[in-house]
Length: 638
Image (cartoon, rainbow, N blue to C red; front, side, top):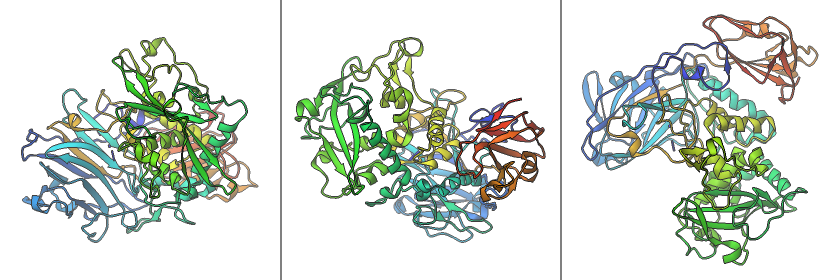
């Protein structure tokens, strides 16, 4: 699974994302400590756990140190009232121990090395939780990170928001190796609110295609319990679910499949021609083209197993009963030559008689795509899937990401745009010989060029791409989009294929929001790293939604509270509130004051069900010192 911090002249949330007219200051507390330095010795990494919940951030409640339980299978030590304590001795590793944050002096913990532990949970509860791993069925709010060790050497680190997301967290690494930036960030940027992010997700669940994400009518998510919290929710996507048949109920997913079918069969779609060997148009009558620079074996016999990359066309059909079948055409394996280019070594047309490989909904292929793994496929597996070898999940990573991210709908991909040969693309070397147009792999990972990778999407690009799909009504998973908005540099692990969309924030100063493949590993941490784990986003009070419409007859489509002027809504709002503004011209003078942080979100229709209106402010809102304002989806036209 996957997931930093520093003093900056400007808080990160003032630099990225939407337009901020003014920014609230943020206090960052950096914990640095010297630790013993040798892999293989019985040493430790020091981690400080911070209660960073803002006032009322957890659905109106503010968890205290005496309500935060730390559950782990790591061997750790800490001090309680000056006395050294230990949890999980070497002989007891594999079991979980638990301690209250309020019992740990200054929140400081030593994660001892070598270590066979894997996870560290933070659980919100008035009473002591069981000393077993929580799962998605529990009503106690929790979150965790996963950091695997090989002996004393740390391997990949993931801040996991994939199983279920209950509240914002943030991990900061300091004292990293000298060839990295001095710090790195995973998870939520400062000043975010759990309730704000949750409300953004909840807003989607009233739409039929996103009902699967809700808590009612068969929705996957879970109502939680915590003293003083009003209707807390554990948001669940089932991206790690075991079972067959659930994905058919994900309306936004099946809608995307229907769009793929329509695009594949639309008049004018280029005919697929045998012999493309992965170099044909991105969209053909055989589907959309995906690829990945990871090994797979040939699906016919499984004996061609020295490939270093693969491509294929992916399409779907739907029978009269509404059942889907996935088809893989023109499957091609490549081996990189000395120039780093993939040369075909096996192709389904030339080596397998034009075989088209299929998996059906009844076999569980939809569920497999959703979890980015073949593990939900009914047994026995089709022979061709087994023949792909131990890395067979790479195919599902690529297919899930192509559908879910919306890359397959990006203009340069759809239109087979040629790659530029000047500027950043100078020196372009195709990963696959003969590929000189945009393709899925290039949009994901960039393309080899002199001095680096050209065309690499960065994190804001991904947010923009997802937002474009939202506006077009084609968003597949709003959970990912809205939680990504809370991120700083490196995202928490939001879904299985995050291996493909992993962020890395350990290079550059300040680190840039950007995408690259591969998780943080041993070379990124070194022996000196110190950790600061922040529980809660520090974003303050619970967000409130207010609605604004000058149409007095429709009364905001029944949404409450409904205001007829923006200023009236501003005056009624508390910090962290979002004002949803219907289309229309607003000529009033608006001023945000009283140390409020607000968001104006416009272009809604009069029912507030669709964002297809046109909200126009005839003068820019004023923002007094100490307040801030974020503008989304509206126009200022004096």
